[in-house]
Length: 157
Image (cartoon, rainbow, N blue to C red; front, top):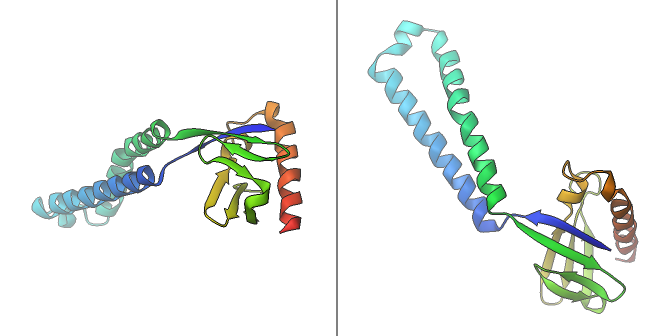
């Protein structure tokens, strides 16, 4: 059985969160300075908060799209093959079933990810692409087979 999924390296996730925080902090400081300098809090009274929310929404909407694009550009595709001998992944290499010490399945209904723990390493797999909005009916048989395979492993461990 073959399937593929996209994963985002940790460095990219940290960088996107860091850039978002810097942007939001900077925007907040600029708005506070603007309202303080022009004494808009006294003029606008209760409308100042509504104005801040509208300005925040107008400015941050493109930011959300830019961050999403940054993550998509820097995500990688991992192709996984599951057969009788083990699991072969372009991200992790070959994992033989004999080496597996623990097999942990996360929530099958929402994220549908699983971890394989060997004596040396922990491997994290996610099936977000084939089970999410990107995956259509052509993946239905793969989804069912993968769930059965994972549930079988969950019973063993």
